[in-house]
Amino acid sequence: MEVMSAIIVDDEPLALELLSNILSEIYNIEVACHCHNGREAIGKIAEIRPDLVFLDIEMPKLTGFDVVTALRGKYTPMIIFVTAFDRYAVKAFDIDAVDYVLKPLDPNRVALAVERARSRKCKNNSNISAPDDISLKRKEEFSEHYEIIQKVSNQVRTRSVKDKLVIKDAGVLNVVAFADIDWIDAAGDYMCVHAAGRIHILRSTMKQLMEKLDGNLFVRVHRSTVVNITRVVSIRSLQKGGSTLVLENGESLRVSRNYRQHVSRLFSHC
Figure 1 (cartoon, rainbow, N blue to C red):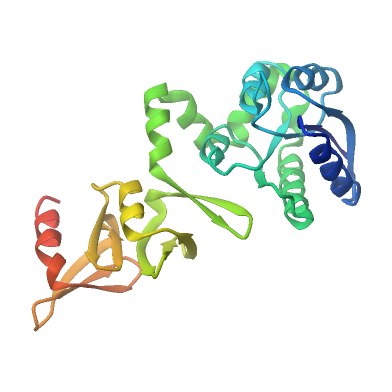
Figure 2: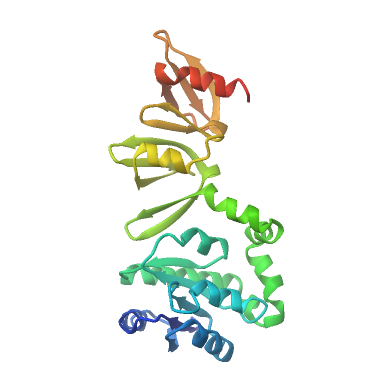
């Protein structure tokens, strides 16, 4: 298995040392150098041309995103963001970062990020052969997502951040597109987000969640249930005044009497 070269960029010496120690225990990855700020990182990336960069986000003068911007049109390695803040996850997703790892670091989580990078390199080994080919090769690697990013305006890209939920689960950040969500049910102060065959657990109140969701796409059908209206295939009336929504996946969701008029009015415009 080919050795991957890496650079670690972080303005905190202890964070650099900890990540370096974790990576030293991972097979076939070699840390070429440490950088303490974004400007130093840009120079070292151009000089060393590593396979992978572990990049902090909040640093003085140049942030991690500033570093990525400065690399555009030049040699661009795979990026794994390593940060204490979850609020940048969607932006990292939009620039095709390999992964987004939260501090405090979990060695198993770092190892998973490295495996993701290794898998990407294996699938696209020819993509990093020449800096002039980076733009074309990235299109091949990330064809659908890359083309969306390139074609839409800055205004649309900004708005697209609102079309995703960032869900933190056991140190892992999952970015879930609204379009992938089937329905959501509440369990106390936790929301169970049913999306693409998985259930994501989100700590939130129903009120907070509804403020994040697209009101044209999601409707509350019960005190504890929200549904993506594009998933509904039929509405069945019940004898006592309520109704049931049947989803594409065969699941049935009860509509309470308090919400039935809202639901009927919404679907009358579809």
